[in-house]
Image 1 (tube, rainbow, N blue to C red):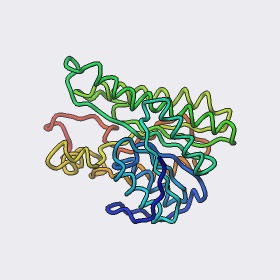
Image 2 (cartoon, rainbow, N blue to C red):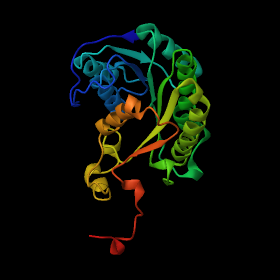
Image 3 (tube, rainbow, N blue to C red):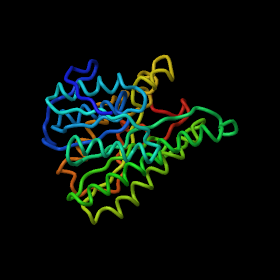
Length: 275
């Protein structure tokens, strides 16, 4: 299903900077949160954007409204990124609307908070299928198209789990660690076609989901982040614009940490920390 809309998305502010004028992008999981921020920043940089969603059609329409408010074309496409048939159809619809794709951001992701010894097979499969298998399926479809069309940029979304273990998130940690290594092998194989593949690893980003993790998510993570604040979807979106731009044309196979420095420092006991 594809729809086009032209209203303004509320609650997200972007700065118009057409570094990617005329490019066409697909962003998965873009109905809210980080995916929405990526879609809006790509639009502000000049991209037409295909917005994938799984179940939140209303959210996808809000994202599309923000893309249209930036003067770009928005297409919404439903699909489960963990299913090959859905991903193939998603690319068919995006290519039908835009003719080509220059940028693909595999952002869709889920997580299950549960002790390892209590995690069910179904819960494990859901996270691995959406996060890791979804990254594979989207990269494969993007690569097949970009190989025949002069190249492009693929971005996979990692996490602090790329670097350190998160207790109670064993399936999520496994999926994100896998994405980092998959990024490298995809870049190594696809570079000959002028396809760049990179991973962006966010730190503590305040979105609808993370705000439910603590009473004051921004304050609790801002205290342990060297830059002194939590991150926002626009921080990730602007980083995607940078990596997709011609200025980053020699960067591939890399994980770019967009975390305010939080995962670059050791966490010491309180008495051993600087005040």
